[in-house]
Length: 159
Image (cartoon, rainbow, N blue to C red; front, side, top):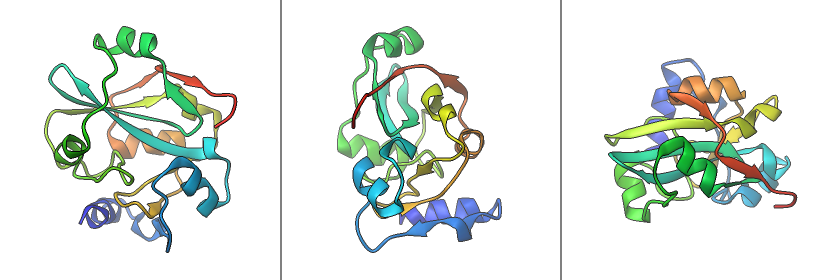
């Protein structure tokens, strides 16, 4: 199970007890924000894209959307999201619980969008559609083994 992989990963760094599991789904930014009692912007969403040689994962604040021009400038390819079945193959996580922790696939590069730096903490999923953990942007970067901070999103006025 995907959440168990993430829990085992966080156990290696002594943070597994901080994973929050909900009775209801947190599969969307708004559902996660409601469950946690925070603004949607404070949800860290992980978006999966097709790269030239695999998968590009971008972790971003919940009140953003991918800016196609910025994405192409940063990665050299058009922003094309992966099909649901490919997300599972590359990440080991089902859509609705995708996170950049405990990735089981190959050829996955992970990035963090600058939009997250506005916040002291955010809440990424933990491999299931009813889980989250509270982390700082720098912890998200470190624990996900991201390779760079990027600016590929536009902050929305309203979610």
